[in-house]
Length: 141
Image (cartoon, rainbow, N blue to C red; front, side):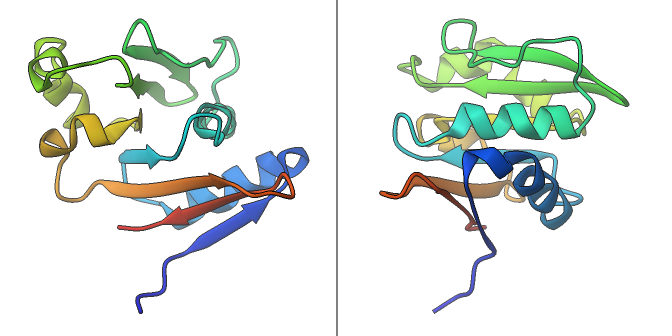
């Protein structure tokens, strides 16, 4: 069985978990977050954005906009939520490839809906809410 890096944390310690995650994910710009509704995907993306220097923007799920752009210390961060799309062409029509290959961080929620469009080097991450309230973040590829 393959060993995948895992981070377990309580929400009170999310900043440290985000720092640890960013160290482990170093060099990866496209990160796809899998998990059930309410698992904490947006909350974790918010913590990652803050660790990357987003200060002025409110980091929130782009459920209706599909993509939000946040200004970080060294440039933009793109945050996608594909929960509401029904066809791959909807992602293609918004210029998804341009974002993916920009070299800038791209955090993607509900990536299972656009899986064929993801680059081969996408870091796939599962977030799971545990019964005790902790979250488990597992890097799976």
